[in-house]
Amino acid sequence: MDCQTFLNLPNKADIPAPLSCTTYFISNIVSAAVPLAGVAAIILIIWSGIKFLTSGGDPLKVEGAKKTLTWAVVGLVIVLMAFVIFKIFSLVSGVNCTILGVQC
Image 1 (tube, rainbow, N blue to C red):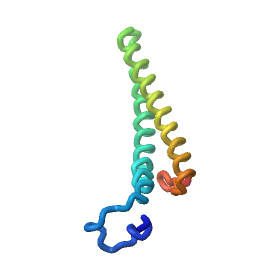
Image 2: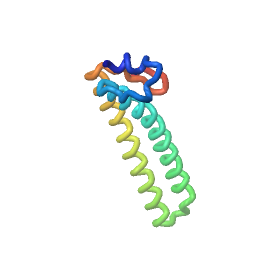
Image 3: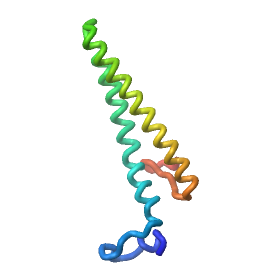
Image 4: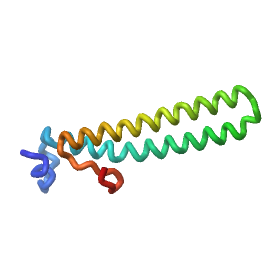
């Protein structure tokens, strides 16, 4: 049974999902995770800016703000790379890539 047939079944509770639904499962996870991780990274970048502004020249606080900024940027790069990898995966597998209603 293909995935589209499985998704159209009225009572799916008793039938395990076929392997062909794996790409749709991964698509749904990435479609939710990429925007959330991107928002989290942007919030952390803003937070590190606030930490810089309120550090008052204290070297320990400045260092903490730098670490926050560094890891926020690293996280944002990882999210962007995940998006690119997912796009490649969707082109190879033929699954439509849609994140927050936007075709990627």
